[in-house]
Image (cartoon, rainbow, N blue to C red):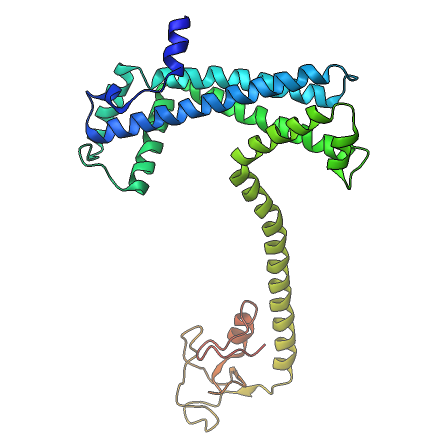
Length: 302
């Protein structure tokens, strides 16, 4: 057991994956190195929080102690998760399956791509590892949810503090000041991992109401223009078509909306656009239920 833990804590060199093509050697070694650094980072968080929680136990138990405890639990679960992920990176059988999958997709595994291509391939390999191990994928979702719960709890702690407008003063004056300060640092480190998600949520919370208001405004403006245009059309005299020789009519003897030729005594309406285009009265009134532009020249009339 101790040998396995020691093996997982020691960074693996690129030569550890010597049996694989150059690209996979680079990808596997970088993923292993990233997991290793994250394990060290998590262990550091765990140890520091434990030290300050022990010091904070001299004060009265409060919400900050509870948050620090949940951070410790999160670190422990996260370490177990990362150790399992690191072991998957050492599982030869599963790595062989990943190699076969990439070869079937036509990926060139001999020539190392540029940085952007390598990062994309690393993400693909990581997804394949998680796909082969559903427990890892499920644990990752639970841990992300757990971390966000911790962030929200600390946020509510800040809101309930006696010095809402000077939170850092509260952290300096309270008994468990050191514990609160270190908890703040740990929560900020968690927040940075989800900063893209929070920025996306924040943007949606702002953008969606603005888009809704803009849509309502544009729709209201359009309806107002249509109503005003209909009132204007009511003031335009309607012409009764007298036949082919009607001197009032222009060259076009058919309505371009319904594509039907004008019949004698039908009501014709001439629009006040630059081309003074003519249409059936019924057709053009129906047209202006959905648009305020001339059907032919597209001139805005509303």
